[in-house]
Image (tube, rainbow, N blue to C red; front, top):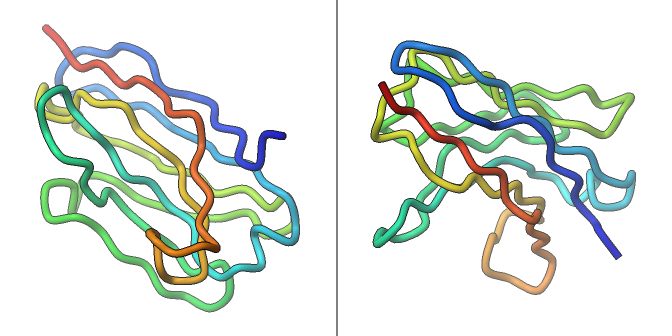
Length: 120
């Protein structure tokens, strides 16, 4: 049973833009937090951005601050990641996550991953 449905991603040249989306159920959306982590080959998984599904809290990883924006559509139980001015080093598999504040806890759900490739 797929809990998080990711879409978007793909290939783009440096400086380009992409948007990821992640749709889920009301119960999972209600856990409190959704967002993305990414993992590049040979590297550890790292935080990209998270957003509170209630309230206004947002958090960004340092490498993407000022270039990526996360926002939500609460009526559709969907979050979006708008990625601007993409760099080669943004190349990775991007994983949507939903949880209650603890990404490693029992109430944490992960998407199947979306490949983002940035190359000249």
